[in-house]
Image (cartoon, rainbow over all chains, first blue to last red; front, side):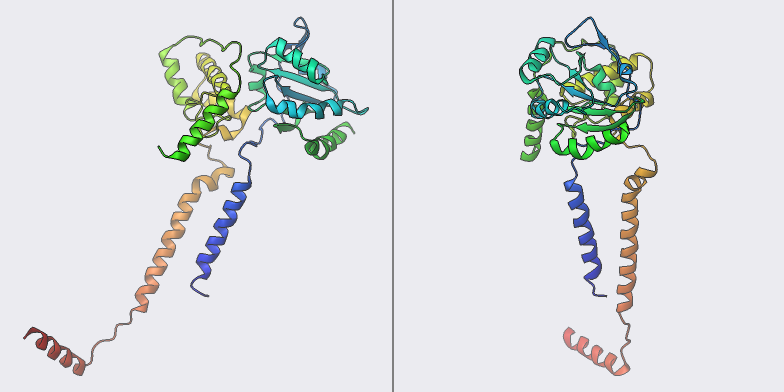
Length: 175
Length: 157
């Protein structure tokens, strides 16, 4: 064995390690909530302060829970994808969570860009967000018929994520 | 402070300010010094998820403020440090802990440096042993000794 063999192997291993490490996205923190029951809460609707929404109402359905806010820039990017999706005949219900927003701003935002949500829950102080481990809006949860979180998307839903991750899972959960 | 650190801090500041200030920041429950002390101690060991290189104690991000408020509330409820950390881990994952728990998935993380140290020591010992073997001890013959003595004497005069 040449005396350079060992250092060379070490060097290649180090480069490989760094290459993998540098290509990971530190923003994508695996959520411990996937596979766990969706935390319960009760907050007013965005459009009807008198009515309250609780995820228990959705038991028996596969649904998407989309956290959004009028101040959130990436939500603008994601919004048309959700609007388009909900127009499909086989679309599952999408519930919004208007996160740390002002009621007026939230309503105006939906009026302007379209409202794909069955309803939006209104999380003024962000407590619901904390219980769902939200740290970067938009975030989206796919919740099954038993009320268990099956998938979490951190950051905007892209057409690719929708087609390749969310929809196949929805199909599986609905079958 | 070097430039890259300054840039990082500036970026963090920009990130935390880019969210418009929300309507009402929940007012601190009360400035109880004992609670505040524990809050700082606990949150210094927790990562802020918005500004990942900052601790929850030091971050000015909106979410960090909310989480500090949450932790303050938990402390007031009489929760132990362990329980407060578990509360955050159950929501945000182990990533929030600057000091990860010791369990099978983190054995390598905790043990890795020692493993590397032992590999290094082992390699060093082997290298030194091999090198000492390479020095071949060949005693001088009588004739060589005489010549050496003669040369040394020559040098002295």
